[in-house]
Image (cartoon, rainbow, N blue to C red; front, side):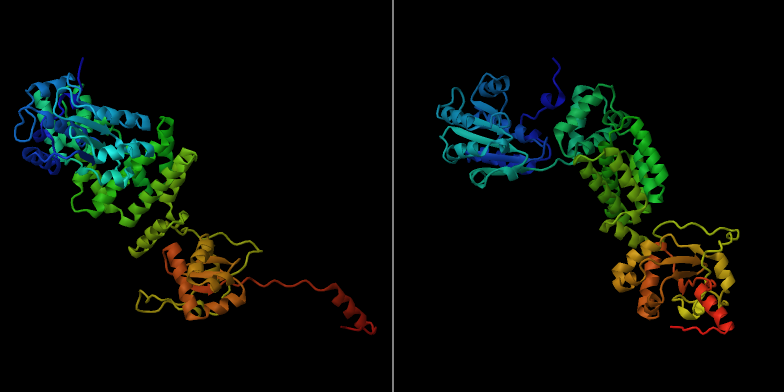
Length: 538
């Protein structure tokens, strides 16, 4: 039967363990000097060598001819432990043996002396899965075990262990293995197996493994089924090929093209793409952009091909960091909502709409993105261009812009004129013909509430029109009394600039006065007076 690579090439000596010198050297020195503890705790992420080192340690303490702290691998005990003939080393899976009765059985067996070896060694894997009662049952034995018993505890979640257990063990922390160490090990294994392995492909596998040697060997085993292992083989096996949709979605969000973003999601949905998986992939994509944007050399942390990394570099340097953080935050929030039971496609579409139009998002990250866009001179949202032809005539009932005072004198512009000579003030006819409704006026009032709540309240229910460089406001006279103050006027202009991205002059939009119909009673009273009939007026 075929044996997978991570089992076939499991290290048999401490010298073969890659990337953990802080553990292996300490254990070898303890074995050389005979300072063997009764309880060890190995903690670290998956695939970093915890169980491997536990087996090597169990073999080394029982080896008849140890070699510089390593087991010889040739003596009767070493061969017996490899074949399973020697039963003095017991491996226990705490996930399935986590009850009090299991630990009581272990305590009873620990009282018996070893059958063939020097020490009876108990390797308890995933020890954090033990129940509180099981921990209490193990505590006394762990503190004062028989002289012939050694406990080796292994866990990926050390924070779940009670402090009473931690204080009774020698703790060794296993780090994530560096990509270069994994690459060297993969090249060695592929050479022993007689399979050609491209060094760049080995480095890509190492980055995808995220510090776990077992994951790297499993992926290499899968790639070797296709023959010679190249970068293209790793891309196809790991699912890295066909990731253009991530770049398309990021580009649509950056350009504010919501239609393109929704069409891309619809196409992926038709192809049975899981929306939660898509959200996770896009989150990882924006994380890579964040690392590239902020770090001097992010290549070791981004597990993509060289071609994709070059594209990511170009995209990252074209996006401001607040925009990337806003996109990352929106994707994380959408993923949380998906797992809370929301419709996944709807949540994905809503998140992309917020990315394309940050003014729809009320989060702090969206606000920081909009402020950054204004600081860099870009408008917060694209504005419709003014039509080249003359605007159609307003209906008879529509108000006619008539300023209470000449607009240039009413609110002076804060910016210096571009031309050396001052342009003449526009006539009322020009203002009337060029006026169009300011659709973003409710957003302006929303921004104004943060700057001056009283002024925003005074202009509640008002309407604004844009005519050239002027914003003409249709509101009550009491509201304009506030705008006569320079501070309030500057706040209003600043709110308009934050929403529209432009600086406008301000002026009133006065409705055209229409003739009031005559009162019938007044007409009747006038006729009576003309006829000589006395009329009493109140």
